[in-house]
Each structure stands twice: as structure tokens, then as C-alpha cells.
Image 1 (tube, helix red, strand yellow):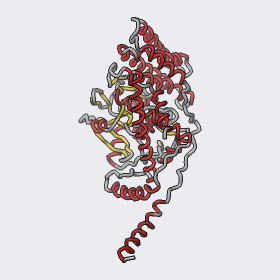
Image 2 (cartoon, helix red, strand yellow; image 1 turned 45 degrees about the vertical axis):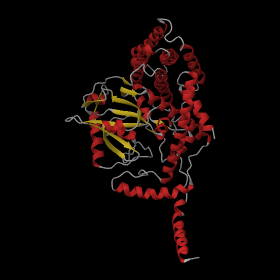
Image 3 (cartoon, helix red, strand yellow; image 1 turned 90 degrees about the vertical axis):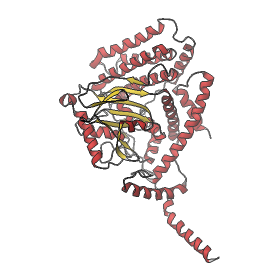
Image 4 (cartoon, rainbow, N blue to C red; image 1 turned 45 degrees about the horizontal axis):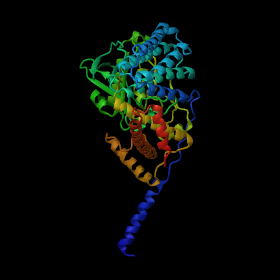
Length: 491
């Protein structure tokens, strides 16, 4: 063996010895126990969904049908909504009026989906129903399992019905839908045609695989994955958006910068003006936003992968809003989120999550202290949202069957080296390739999850387009889930 060859072998052997320790896999993460109050919600109504689809197929040829028929059905639904307003504070979670509202809202949806002329009216009625239920629920125990289920059935169920209608009639309602223009004494500004105020909360859905996981990965799967807090400067009217990013920690951006990030939907929430805390101090929301803005300018706040909503040293997206308001004496998320399923907890723990009773973005919609000011839903983005949800639901079913998020063993040493490089990048104020607080193995599992999800979503989209061509209408959500199950189960 020549000297040059011996040198090459020696160097290669030395590098191998250096890399071997980096290839030792970390111990499996400890998975915390499920919350005692947690219980996964199960609709268990597949026969109803299929009956609704058959009703829509039957209604399509006739469109709006005979004059007056659909109007009478809509009027009955609207009358039920009025009844909720009349009942007001006397409305209880067990009230039969809520059962009737749910039944009527689902029953009429197939007819509405076949008649574009009444879509806007139906959407408006569902929005009024949401507002009425939220007002009444201010006096309910939002952490009681029966109350959580009731709010979810009525509010998420109403949302689901509206969105099935919108997907079948994409041009029948505007993308921007106004809610309640709740009065506010805080500084305001107009953004994208909506007047927002300092202290408003933006709830959105990102267009990434982990966004769908955040939205669906809890006991009451929802549609939102991100929270941001609005600050409007009283003197200049400049709008700042404060939010926590996995890559950066807490950051400040403009309204334009916030909207430029990939989003499939956005909702604006505002505290009710008649809350005792706001009656005592109408500027409370602005003070919450100002305190969080000042802190984000003053110090670096790392991202909280553990989702420990009561630890202010690190913040995930929901905490940006809840910590800011908590500092002013107001507690958001009257109903805390729970994550109970063992497979899901195992996956989330492998990403670094340690708290399974926390504050999920989707659940803020159900907080009765907040009203919906406006919501943006684009038809194309809405369909992509539903595909991502269906794929995520099917993947999470696999997690409960024992599917694991693995990675190639040989990728671990480079990932650990990259983590060191990221640490240096972060010391100089740049975002690291591997985010601060995320372990190399967690980053690799995250990449595995994203690659799987994107591949499945692409196949489901292809099959959904074939379905649309064959059936003549957009596959409803339950059909998308069935397609996703087939794709996930395929080799």
C-alpha cells in the first residue's frame, strides 16, 4: 500500500471514528400521559353524511326547485336562529333548540348546495347562529367535556356544512365574509377592506403539512393552525403583526408581510366590548398588544416546542395572544385543548411537544369572549385545505395503528453537524437551518412527515379530480377521507 493510499485510509478511518458517535440514535422521547379531562370527539354519523350526499345528488338536476320550497326551509332555519337569540342567557348546553339547529343546518345544506341563489343567505344564517351560541356559552363551563362537545358540534358542524356548500358553489359567495363589527375603542386601520383594531387576533391556516397536523391533531380537530396578535400604532396608524414562528421565535411583521406568507384561510377575532374587563378598561386589548410588541422588540423570545402555554419564557403562536392578554388580567381559551390519542401523542412528542392540555389555534374560535369580525376563504385554497385535512386524518389513523415517523440512520450525523452550524447562525441573528429548540432527530422526523404528507396529498388531489370528472361535483369531505385512506394504505 502506497503512502498516499495509507494517508487516505487513515484520514477516512479518523473521520469515521469521529462520525460514529454522531450516528448513535437518541433515546425514544418520553410520551407524557393523556390529560385526565381529555376525550377524543367522534361524530359517528357516517350514514348521515352519505344521506346528505345522496340528497345533494338528487337535488342537483332541479337546482333551486319549485318556487317557495327552499325559501320555506331557509325561513325555518332562520327562525331557529332567532329563537336562540330570544333564549339568550337562558340557553343551556342541553337545550333541544341546539339539537334542532344542528339538524336543520345539516338537512337543508344539500338543497342550498344545488341552488346558488340562496348560498349567501344560508352562510349569513349560519354566521348568526355561531354568534348567538357563542354569546350564550359565555356562562357555560367550557372545560366540561359535554360542553366542549356541544360547542364543537354546533360551531364546527355549522362551519363544515357551510364549506361543503361553498365548494359546490364557489362563485355564490364572496371570499371575504363579514362577521360582527364589534365596537372597539383601540386604534384601528383598514387592511384588505376590513377595519381591524389593536388587540385583534388573526387566526389562520398555513399551507404546509405541519399546519394541517396542528389543525387536526387534537381531541376536537379543527381548521386553523396559527395565531397572531395585531398592534395598531395610535399616532401613525401603522399595523404590526406579532407572531411566533418555528424558525425565528417571536417576530414582528407588517400586515402585508403577514398576508404574503402562505395561508389557506384567515379569520379576525375581537374581544367583546361588553366584557367586564373591557368595560373597566376599553384600551385593554391595545395594552396587551403593546406589551407583546415591546417585549418582542426588546428581547429574543424562542419558540416553545413543548406547547407549555403557562411558561412565558418561550412562546408558541397561541401564547403570543394569550400571554399578552394574561398580562392584562384576561384569560383567553376558556376551554383548553386536549390531546388524548396515544399514537398522536407519540408523534407530537417526537417533535418535542410535552404538554397535551394546551391552547390550540382552532379552539380559539369557540371562546365566547371573542367575536368573529371577518373571515376570508378562497374556493381554491379551501379545497386544498380539505385535501390536507383528509390526508392528515388518514395519517393519524395510521399513527393509532402503530405507524411511526422514522428517518434514515445515515442522515443523523449530518443533521447533528447541521445543528451545530445552525447554532452559530442563530448567534449572529440569522434563522438556523434547524430551528432553535428543535433536536436533529425531531427535524428529520419533521422532514419525513412533510414528505409523506405531500406525496399523499398529490395522489389524493389526482383522485379527487378524477372523481369530479366522473361524478360531476366536488367530492365532499367524507369522500376525500375515503380517498386518503386508500392512498395511505397503498404500497
